[in-house]
Image (cartoon, rainbow, N blue to C red):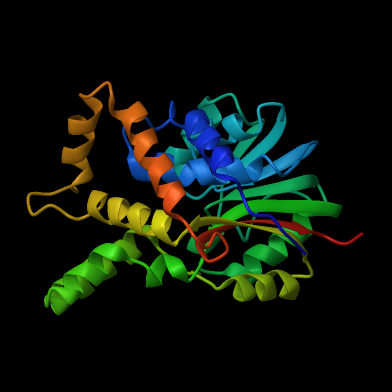
Length: 277
């Protein structure tokens, strides 16, 4: 298995690429920048299945030359956004373990930050195996066990002596993200192996400093407000009113990259996994 470590300049170029999509949502632009940088080392072509497709904007940014793509999303409203995007030939409203497509009908499957949310992971991976042509690949990003272990907001609140509040914050955070599979790297590798898939490449994303800041931003964004909604509903208009924010946050991001000392231990990963011929 190839283990590729990203360079700081690659991640910054990732931020420059994704920032126009999420200019005033720093946790999203932060995470997506790392994914973008990792995907530049991956290649897909032909007919592609996008598992958990969303509105299609990120897919088009990552894979601008893919013209034969089919999306799958469980949420009807989100799937409709994908249909209207012009990115996909079709978008199915279906769970990932029940894709309404024939056997061996895709050259590649793309699963961006979706597998960790799926309750039936082994069945989903078996379905990916079924849908892929021989020698086809699954390319996608996931979270690791560090996503839970490095949850900075709940850990800080616990250290301040507010154990019950810390537990409630962590519970809400995990429920919001529906983290069914925050697996170790070895756990992900074993899951792929059980499905008959061969892990070819692992690209670690978001080491400890970047993970901590991302998780703090994301946790704060999704803290429930007593009056309804979440703190992000207040933070977003504040940030979007400042035209200097995207460029200024890039400087913060660059500083976080300079602080990293171990780029192997991370809260996320991009994998390339192949179906044998």
